[in-house]
Amino acid sequence: LHTLLGRLQSLAPVADISALANCIVDRWTVERDQAVPSARGLANRLYVLEDGFAFDFALLAGGKRHIFDFYGPGAICNWTRPEREDTPEHILFKARSEVLVLDRDRVSAVLARDGRLAAALHEHEVRRAMRVSQRVRALISLPARESLRILLLDLDDEFAAAGEEREWLPMPLTQEEIGDLIGSTSVHVSRTIATLEKDREIERRTNSFRINGIEGLRARMSYRRFFDHMPMADLRSAAMG
Amino acid sequence: LHTLLGRLQSLAPVADISALANCIVDRWTVERDQAVPSARGLANRLYVLEDGFAFDFALLAGGKRHIFDFYGPGAICNWTRPEREDTPEHILFKARSEVLVLDRDRVSAVLARDGRLAAALHEHEVRRAMRVSQRVRALISLPARESLRILLLDLDDEFAAAGEEREWLPMPLTQEEIGDLIGSTSVHVSRTIATLEKDREIERRTNSFRINGIEGLRARMSYRRFFDHMPMADLRSAAMG
DNA sequence: CGTGAACTTGAGACTATTCAAAGAGTGTGG
DNA sequence: CCACACTCTTTGAATAGTCTCAAGTTCACG
Image (cartoon, rainbow over all chains, first blue to last red; front, side, top):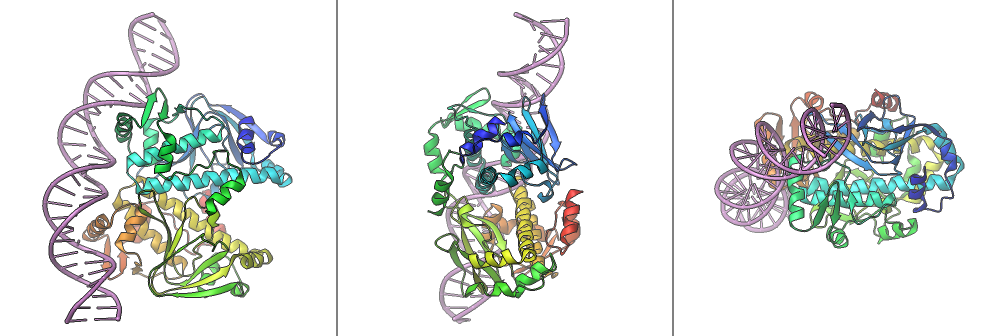
């Protein structure tokens, strides 16, 4: 659970989360990409991504897959209660992920005793929800090139939340998955990435990206970071301004 | 506040909300379309739409307006706290709306005393959030024709929540606004509506629509209703199935 | 009945999808 | 180490979807 602890410590002074360790009921080492239904009798299970990458998705009426959000190391993959969801949701864990399975009821009991921990966890999930909201705006209104930029910034933010702020941003998603996330197709994603590269906006290596002038990009797109290790109080006041 | 009461009574047996009436600090009669910032010193104000129509929107980096959600009679327009928002939000009240302005702190005090009322209000807003989530999926992934269908079903759902289930669905939004809602342009909205009409999927009068075979449309799109006056317990169990 | 806002229509440009085929990368077993 | 199978990515060409600009038309309302 040390990756989760790292996330929370950047939000609030959480001493330790050893109490959460007692909530662990299982531990998976994911060999190949594996999708699990989030609400099929597993409603009282909480998935914490110890390492690796995951995303949640739903299948639309036409059979199209829509990816809603993604999770880096330390993230909780199904914090929102499944019965709250509008559509049957699934979580896909990418190959070579480490997943801790926690018992929801036990976690609730721990949080009831440790208000500070509860606040930090809640804050973490609220920020995630705000980031989704920011992205969704762009995905609905803007063309694929802009949507892709937002996705790259969001990925950077997610890895920053996990404490992995590097120059080369890992890309754990296939272009098919990127398409299902931004509402496009794998072919068009491929072409759009190619034009961004040609315009020297990004550079590519195998499975990783580098964004040239990421600060300027954020400014141009009015992109707001949610996990840049800013204390809670500052975030609140920044939002009020 | 009788329209709000009507909404809540369909969700749970709420006796009366006269206590909320004491929270009213102002009352507006909106002559012409009027936009107000939701978080500019008015953070402790709650807007209840006694009658009329409203929507909230934000301006994206390029100046494009994105409409996030809309509100029919009896709806609370800014339940989610403004400082939680990712972008400066605004609420636009359409002409001929009646708005009640409530004091948030007083409302909180009332809800602290009346747990049943608090639960009903919370349930109402949760359902709204789920409906937004369902719509957003479609808007990101599907072409304009499908997006428009979802919007019409959502509008129908919103008026049903207000207790106004009629055959002819009022359309309080201009085509420009519909475009800003589904991520399209007014011109394309005009053409898309025209094709739906030509295919006999909808009929039109001035400022109102009729959806032919709305049940079948819901089934085809796997559309889930959130305000069809189904009791809470049934909704929960339906979600679990 | 005039006025302004909302809606419609057309033409051309741009954006995105589909289908199909070829190319590149990864891991496995010989 | 190579060969193979597999998935992912790239590319091309045709088609479909959407945007922009601009000019009309309709409609609501004073």
